[in-house]
Length: 491
Image (cartoon, rainbow, N blue to C red; front, side):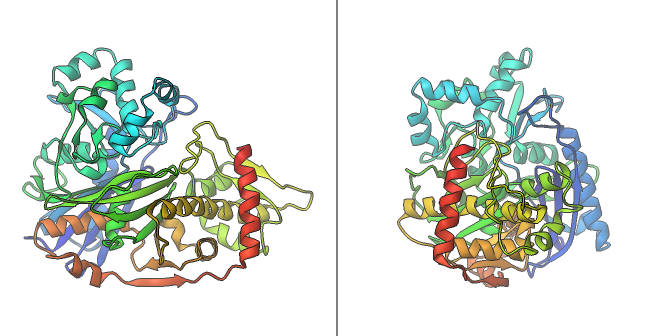
């Protein structure tokens, strides 16, 4: 690598974060720039690709300025992204045909039900490891082709390019139309075992093969910057990975049975299952973790749609918090939730329930309920959703966790982490670097360009910042789980 730093670009749901990582795997600079979400109708969530790009340019520029660096100091670029969010654009002009449809978008829920009723659910599960849910990109792609005038014919002629945000960002940086297996495996169009686009599913969803990107290894030089403006030409884009798989990699969960949970807008739990895909009978997703030098690591995943977003709702929707960070002190001001149970199904329920029609539910309110009890119930609701997922995935794998590595913004909340450890019955371990999604993409880019040579080198550099040992009373845990199950049934 010719420059001093690896640039990791983490393109997320509410903003873009740029990290500069040096050879010691130290994050020396960080910048985050937010951009708006657009809600044209209830249940619909969109992003403007130009607003995404502008946030990325600003974040990279700010990160460089923070340490007085220039673009020429960047030796490699890694990109991670919000996975299922997708769009089409014109190959000749680069102009998107429509705003990107975000992973939270539910407009294709009826189409998913129709496909299930037609008997396609088993094919989808066997081929992709996923479930028929509007969360994934395939039905979003079909919707765009059906609802944008002329799009289907243009896609069939190869005039349009399709991609998740990693693909779009890489195309704008380098001109290469590529994705990696971790992102491809989230589209409903990818054969998990063949590691290739599925003819059966591209035909089912009527997505022309001509518009799909090439699937490449996660750590490899995919192209070089050209004509970007805010970066010099010639920097290799060498790491691509979906954000949650990036966090699994950034947490050094390289061995079978290691797991992480990222607490962001949602909460995403991934469990390393080794070099064979593990099917789930309990509502988990089977997905690709990464592919290095042609060798694939698989994972089980459980996706909780609403985690940190529930805290944002307390702040913005109800006005009981001035800032999200206030929730820990407010929740800690009472010993428990006072019998209040909050199921934060503000965008349906993900794993293991997969109910897109579920809605947020609060039970157990009495005349003595205060905003502190609701704050406490919100943290419990986040932790209980994760607990549901972990119990299902460990049953699928047939082995218990030794520990859970945690990251993301809400992992800084000590009360939430302690509650999570109590529920899981294993330690929750917080690393020095909480932004492991971006770090993972940077590590992959560094592996591809010789900054680091082995996984052991990365494993040894991973450092623990805090460990939360379980201290809960099991009788209280089981009572809480029973009340939670009743509330979920009402959601």
